[in-house]
Length: 87
Image 1: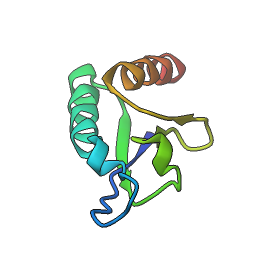
Image 2 (image 1 turned 45 degrees about the vertical axis):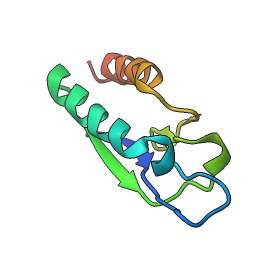
Image 3 (image 1 turned 60 degrees about the vertical axis):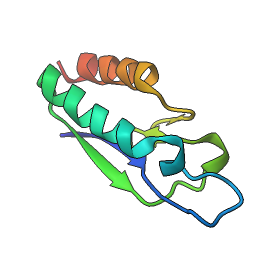
Image 4 (image 1 turned 180 degrees about the vertical axis):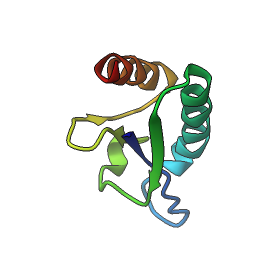
């Protein structure tokens, strides 16, 4: 099964916004719903931190490049790419 990692770290007392403060938790929810809607064999793993906070929200497929400033459009494109590799 393929996996997408997404940072959902919340650091409320940091001088720099965390991925969660930039909407990554809602984005992870959307991603899980979209995977289910498309009936893809992909899992979402919510992780604590990639160490890429300035570029958040951050996601990645293990072993692949980061998706920085992730949004629904970028993650939809990643799902398209992963779906074509699975089939």
